[in-house]
Amino acid sequence: MRRYPPIGDHGLIGDLRTAALVSSDGVLDWFCAPRFDSPSLFAALLDHDRGGHFTITEDGPGTTTRQLYLADTAVLVTRFMTEEGVGEVIDFMPLGEAEAPAGQNRIIRILRVTRGTVRFRLDCRPAFDYARGTHGLTLQGDTAHFTTPDLAVFLQVGGPVRLTSDGTGVHGEALLRQGDMAAAVLTVCHGPAAATAPEPITEGRMRHAFYSTYEYWHRWLRRSRYRGRWQQMVNRSAITLKLMTYAPTGAPVAAVTMGLPERVGGERNWDYRYTWVRDGSLSVKALLDLGFEEEADAFRRWLGGRVTDRRTVTGEPLQIMYRVDGDPHLDEAVLDHLEGYRGSAPVRLGNGAAEQLQLDIYGEVVFALSHGSDVTQTAGYDGWQNLSALLDWLAANWDRPDEGIWETRGGRQDFTYSRLMCWSAFDRGIRMATELARPADVAGWTAARDAVFRQIVERGYSPRRQAFVQALDGDVLDAALLLLPTVGFLSPKDRRWLSTLDAIESDLVSDSLVHRYDPGESPDGLRGDEGTFSLCTFLYVGALARAGRLGMARYAFDKMLTYANHVGLFAEEIGPRGEQLGNFPQAFTHLALITAAQALDEALDRAED
Image (cartoon, rainbow, N blue to C red; front, side, top):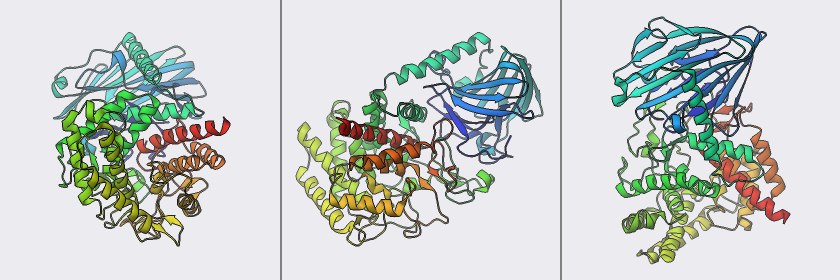
């Protein structure tokens, strides 16, 4: 077991309530239950010695490994090729007919040998509550029972696996020959289910769980309408976004991890296991374009709930992020007992950015609700009244400095992107009120929209840089403004926009990879530098495509795809050596990949007609 495998050296499995990471060595080193934002059971990624892990591997001399997904599924295969044979571990969390019952999360790990003989080693050592908790352990035959005041965790093994205990963890070995199969099932029970042990595992149940999950993903993906040039990568991104969505509420998390660094050894280590209003709102159109109406509608219902209840810790009508159930409390704390990934400290739990003012989210909320009639049909008149009141509030508050899209901790500024999305909120709100014939202060919204427009053009555009810039009256470039033509503020071929695109290419693009801004020119209150932002690279591709620069767009897109990890996943950033950095995988990046592919496909199709 490597002390800290590369961040990108992992696959993702999940049950639409939580998820786990499995390294290409067969080490399950990140898992929280029962929800994405619950305390961890395994967190070796954040502390090798204390964090806990669940390993099934073959570590003999000369062993090589390969990890892959079964095509168009979230079933992960880690294959071990040894001098004596070829074995594999098939990892998944059951869905479909075999989905774990309420109150349970279940990870199934099937061991197989396809050639020769392979000796597998099993080591399960949970460390509850971010390695702060203690637990009891009872071992009876083929079942280990770990207990805490809140959870009951069962590890069951089937086949020629024998478990032994050292008091806090269990170990085992299994020598399998060609055609042999064994299994290890980890079941996390919470609530009333914690009082009941799971049913014994059998080969029949394992096969049923496997095929049920395998077919679930194929059925789900058949709903996709995407038939473009990058089918495999778009499908993988769609599956990843689905895995990162909390099914009971329809809310997606930004990433399944916390504390993974944007620079190894640095302090930019955040908790991303929450739902950002911005990310989820911008996903709605992409989901609808792909054909995933149910997922888009589920998130809009969750979003409508936030607009209606206005329960925030900031006193503003909305806050930038919430827990997956809509809880606004995300108090930030430091887990100083954890080493951090390769010494990257502090490890933060919770996210203090939830208390920031980021005015752009109001534009993204209206953007999401304006796609379809959900606000007037599902939410009805009361829903419209709530949205209208939100825009009334924005009309009186848009001209305020805020922390901006990048959640800087260097003080509030008059960020141009925040103004842009306020403009978008008014623009779409006016259209909705007019098209749907709903009561609204259209005159007030129109006045606010026009005032924002003039401010952006007159103060958000730098004649010296010949570009729209990060903050009013400034000169710093910002890749967030790559969305400027997407929301309809200017034509993608407007001269001001084309010169902005040229400036971004000159200052923020490095071999087709895009930095979000230059921290040296725009101090953000944090030490150290960062890699290129994968989200921004895909935004750059979309901007190039809309501007008609198709050769550059296609090259940049294809180049970026080569930075995906071995199973097609992206973290938040790409580091100086091409490594994945930041929390993993990042939903916003996979969303941007889908929208870039769609924009590029449309532009290429038009050019070929």
